[in-house]
Length: 372
Figure 1: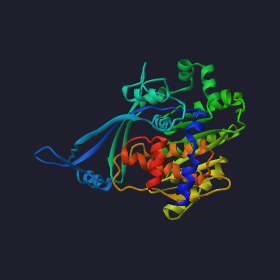
Figure 2 (figure 1 turned 135 degrees about the vertical axis):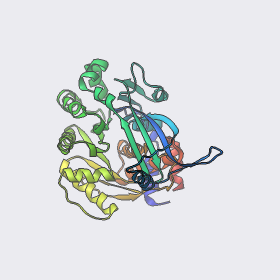
Figure 3 (figure 1 turned 45 degrees about the horizontal axis):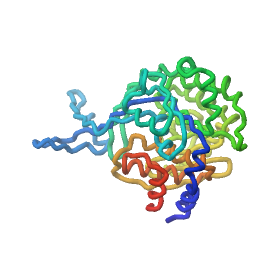
Figure 4 (figure 1 turned 45 degrees about the vertical axis):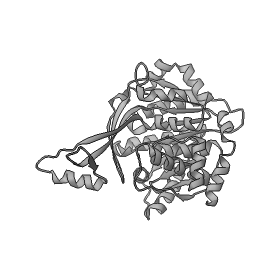
């Protein structure tokens, strides 16, 4: 066992009782995910083999140009989706008391979200979106129908939840995660309202610690660069009231570097580490973390570590892996770990999930760390 793994395990000592003294608030999206595999060949006895990589699918699609293509999709699982709900569900599995807000179904949460009620409070503000996630051994293709996300607005949240309860939810939360800006067209407006109406009214925590807030833009490629730049500026402003962390996958880090005109080059690991530091300095936030399938890097004012993760070539599931990384990394932040410990908890939480298709409890996480 490595020294970094041992230190992560030490951070989890007594974590159950320490988490019970915290409170989380996570949102604001909601999707029903269908996990699908694309059939390659089907035998006469009904058994199927699947296209295993994205380049293989791309070649098949390109081969049909000028004629036609047909693909059979097999549903592997129907599950709760959305960056906020997946992250909330994972953090609730650790034992963190929390509230999850999002468009989870109307007037009651959709059936896929109902099991979350055992571990956390759910507040729904509208119907969920839908995502068909095509899974491959080397990644996934997300086909999203997200018109319902346009209903998630500050006005809707005030009407459904009430302004005073909204303020109370943020006041009681020591940790906040606001995810999936790219799918929520009114998220920037919500952030502005929070900065104008809610954050200035937050009283200091009795512990003397600063509240923590985590952001996941969730694939900004299909948003206009000027909108992305505006969102990044708003994220930076939250540093006034919170220790602010921006989470990115490797692809997103490259896109954000382009928007911020940060001209970085280098091998994947070196790029991720340099990007985390450069983006953090540009935004003026407490931390930035960049994760990929096989490694992750992070940066704060005094730390810039990189860590290889427990990579698996054929994951049981990959949709939600990034959200589980974010949950594990945030667990480290809540427990006041250093960035090495946060990265270790992030890659272990994601590693456990892609191997089992389940969110780990703290006991599961300790067991997994003891094996890597």
